[in-house]
Each structure stands twice: as structure tokens, then as C-alpha cells.
Image (cartoon, rainbow, N blue to C red):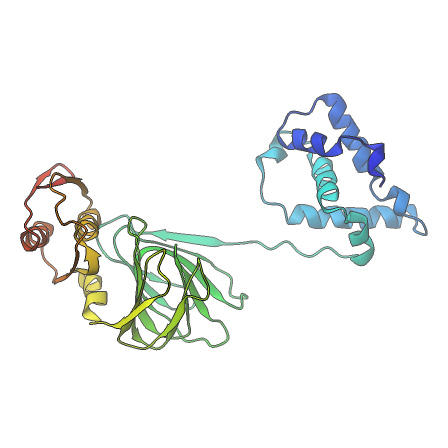
Length: 321
């Protein structure tokens, strides 16, 4: 196709996708669509040229995400989108000659589990791996047994018991980290309101990398944890008491190397409360605590006592004095 025959085509396509084309402009784009491949069909019968052109369009449609545009301009939209891909790629006709059969569209089945309660939620994945989600945590994955890798996205805190499958590595994505494992048990802390992220390994082996800089990484041994904060030049890897990584799974509460602020907020939000600060003295100081399962008020009272604070509760808000 010769672009000079259709001046301003890019601008027209942009107007089309914005739903602003006039009837005359839609007619011009229709004309453009009808010309696709015609001037390059030398040596091909009309039927063969049409079949190849339609094969290209069918493949393109199959790879399009569901779009609200389909319901705005039903009669012309498929032809308009076909013209759009030709303009942006510039290789439609070449594709027709190179590929006679369009690939089958890939259908994604993304699953999401959210724990909106204060209790621990257990999730069994399709490969029989088990995940325990702490309060307000969420887990998202694509259910596709044919995939060569098992990818999951975690927000919040989760404990993983992963089934060993050397042919299909298990990869967890958090806001700041990528964690690659085979068969192992470990805990991940990736709270959206906290800067720090941590992976604590109980058994097996995991490889941890910072998303911002893939050269920042470490391979953990059992009994060690990797801690990362954006801006760090590396991962802080240190031996850790694994009870600190698993007490929450039994209904208790832990905070290892967290600021007083983050520990208070984590405890309160886990139990459905927001925090109002009337006393901010030393709240950025790091602490380590572990409380066995007990009432929220008792754990909050102990945490406040240790940090020279008082509290009151009104409705679903905790005020720290």
C-alpha cells in the first residue's frame, strides 16, 4: 500500500480509537482497508489473496484484548483495527506472504485470591503447592499447566510450601523482589505500606533478586533471611530465628527489624483497625517482637508498653498517645 494515497492516516486512526471519526473519515478508512494487499497480490488469484488477507486479520483479532471499541462501531470496527495494525507495524503484507495459518489465540485464566479477614487463609494451588495468606494479603496467578514456569504475584505476607517440579520453576513476584524456587518452604513479607521486603527460608533453596536492579541478588540457605529496601545497594542476608517468620501463621504476631510505626500499623490493620498518631516519638526506631496467639488488645498493649506508648480504641480506629 502506498501511504501517500491516504494522507493523515495516522491522525485518522487516532481519532477512530478515540471514537471521534466523522462518517466521511470512517468511509476513508474503509477504503483504506479494502485496498490492503491488493496492490501486492501479483501472481495470486483473487481468492488466494483474500484468504491470506483474512488469515492475517483473524490472527490480529485473536490477539487483541477485549475492547469497549467493539461495541461502539460494530459495522466498521474490525476493518478499522486491521488498518491500524498495518499503519503501526508496516509489515502486514510481508506477514501474509510469510505465514499462511494464523496462530491460535492464547486464553489467559488469571485467578485472584484475597484475604480480607483477620484470620489466616490457606490456598491450595493447581500443582498442590500450599500458601498461607496473612490478613489483607492477596495472591494472583495464571492457571495454565502447559506453562514452563509457575508465576505468582504476592501482595502482603504469605508462607509457601512449594511442590518440587524441576521442569517448572516456581517464581514469585512482589513489588520489589523476584523469588525463584524449586521445592521449598519459606515466608515472604511484601506489605504495600512498608518500604522493607523480606524472604525467610525454612528449607530448600531460593534465589532472590531486586526488580529495580537484577544484579542485586542472593541465594539463601535454610535459616537465613534476605531483607531489601528500595535504594539499598544489595540484599541484607542474615541468619534468623525462623519462629519470627512463622508465628503469624499460627495466629500470633511478629515484627522482625520493623520500625515501631510499621509494627503498630501491621498489627492494627491485621485486625481491621486504622491508626491515628498523637505521639510520634521514636516511632522510626526498629524493633523485634514475637507474640503468641492472644487477643488484639493484649498484643497492642504489650507493644505499646515496650515502646512507652498508650492507646485508646474508638470504633475501628486506634489512637496512639
